[in-house]
Length: 96
Image (tube, rainbow, N blue to C red; front, side):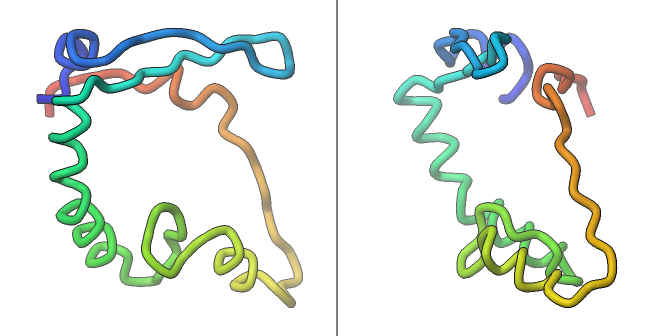
């Protein structure tokens, strides 16, 4: 359902410029594909919550956000922050 061919067939692919002059590829799902993804949202969220035994994930979860993530780091002697540059440009579709 989520292989490279399916994504290409069900998404409008385009690029937008970034502040640094480079471009970001955007995959905008069509209406039917978006409905499929939305129907899976609650099951996926439930799975992430169950797997997150240490409550370290703060992205896209109810009652968790960048503020709750930052609060967990207050008073720490050292906090490491980094950005995965162009992360999604290197994600590939491979059969499991």
